Image (tube, rainbow, N blue to C red; front, side, top):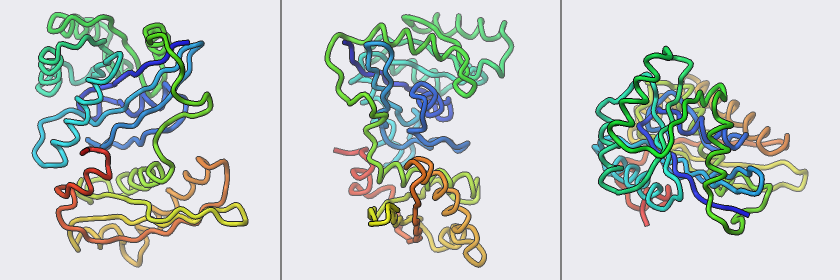
Length: 294
């Protein structure tokens, strides 16, 4: 029996959450086109033969500007420090840009070994891909290099098998049927936040947050879920609600459908509320709630 942790680090939008979902074979981390979507360290579990691999989906590493940013970047490096294997995931189209160069320097400073995973290979020509792999390996002594498409699954099986072989001997830490250590209440909030981002695109600033306030199992087998969407200004609240409440209805419908599927087809009664909480992203209590502060 083998069991260990794999931290997947990288710049925002490198495809970390998509890769985690593909490796596990189920949705355990939300995915949007917005950068810095992942805020907390999500642990997802995959079993390969006699190995249990616990993947840590970390926030993207970038130059922080706010307290929330600093906490997210710290959480990412903390996740890497605790892992048995560190995988640097790179969007092949971006190459060795400023953010990836900063991450490489962080790896050098930490003294950690790492593997290189070049993602989105279907969007770049092969000669450029080989050149990119050579460039990164000249900058840092990676233990191995993989070329994948997290979205399409190309190369992911080889990566999964490699990681399984490198897990240290030891008992499994999670039951065989458990895919994540993320509580359902938090996953439900993340799903709603995903629908919020997808529906509003660039209309809503980054600083929005969703909390599940009530999770009630009802006698008929259905579930009542009440969630609050926190924004920072009254004008943002109006954007989320939309004309005649249509926007929040659309967000609720999309979230409810996905939650029902996640819960095996059980009926979900989802109620969304919008509140203004100024500077929530600088509030230590909220950052602790997100698991970004001790």
